Amino acid sequence: MPRKKNPFGKTADKMKPYARFTNGDFVWNILKTYKLPENEQKDPYASWFCFVTSSHCPDGEYGDTYRQDILRHGQLMECTPEWGEAYLCPWAVTEQA
Image (cartoon, rainbow, N blue to C red):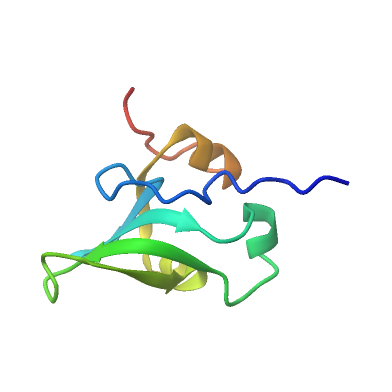
């Protein structure tokens, strides 16, 4: 059986992330995922590559962040239509074309 391709495996530009989560002044811009969305749920250590800004680091930093931490503490503010479909977020605000 052929392997399924990760639709978020290519690094996105920090100005056009796949999704943006916020909590207070923390902003997680999701630039890449390492696993298929359906496989992440089985892995408590699944991580996403992000560009994160906050009052502690207003210029932002790149790095991996645990998926569960973003989902537990962040609120989805916007996403691409593909992200909304893959992560079952039809209520999410999608970016304008």
